[in-house]
Image 1 (tube, rainbow, N blue to C red):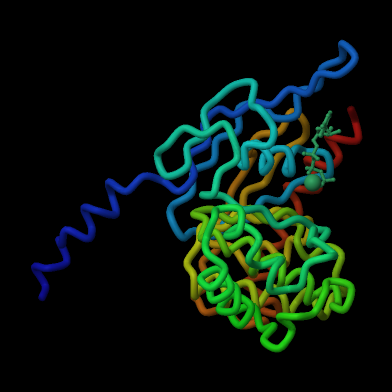
Image 2 (image 1 turned 90 degrees about the horizontal axis):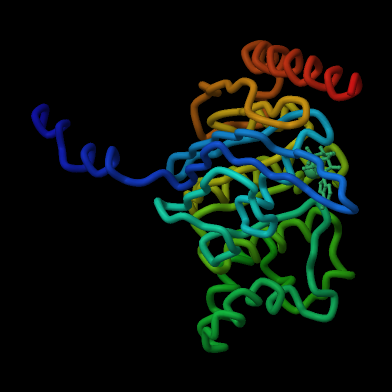
Length: 274
Ligand SMILES: Nc1ncnc2c1ncn2[C@@H]1O[C@H](COP(=O)(O)OP(=O)(O)OP(=O)(O)O)[C@@H](O)[C@H]1O
Ligand SMILES: [Mg+2]
């Protein structure tokens, strides 16, 4: 068996394209003859199945970067590749979860989750089957016929995550998905997200202001600097998985959080000087 460690699996891993390969990405917003450089020279690569969190001061371009990766905002420079393919427009290989659960109020949980499959022309029986599985995965069994207005904030975000997974995307883009939740619900959603991510092994790019959240969730945390943003520093988060919420109380987690906080704080003061 020893000799088999040089297996073809290793070679495959080496040649497999990155799930995300963003190089030298710039975004400039122009309106009323004024232009604002939001991103300049952002480089970010993610292996398949990796969980990366982006932190950084408000206005540093985190959401802009996520939207550029999703193809909703045009880039003014650089190249974004998903699975080795250059991309400039939205596609089924990516799905976004926002802070505000953007569910259709007139659709049931089942039909919200099945929405992407409906768009893709998947037959009703099959899309409902897939949606029911995802609803179960998200811990919402029994709520298939409920409407969004009948759900709590945390439940809505569970539906949103299930909905994002429905089209089986390569890359999940999450922009402060738990920011509107109370602290307790937020912590349980962090654990739930890791459980779901572990089961489905998606590549996840997650923006947050909460440094403890980033350290708990991520394989790697990257910090965006003051505008025009780029990656100013990154940390590999060494904690084994599966992770339990107690990790957040450990001195090791606190030590990394402190380092990250210092960088974000420094960059935040640079923003306010502008
Ligand atoms: N559609 C737009 N048109 C013009 N400027 C924009 C647009 N969207 C964002 N910006 C500007 O780009 C910069 C980056 O904004 P962005 O929303 O990406 O920051 P962020 O890091 O996500 O901030 P926050 O942490 O507050 O969510 C800001 O200066 C913002 O005003
Ligand atoms: Mg934002």
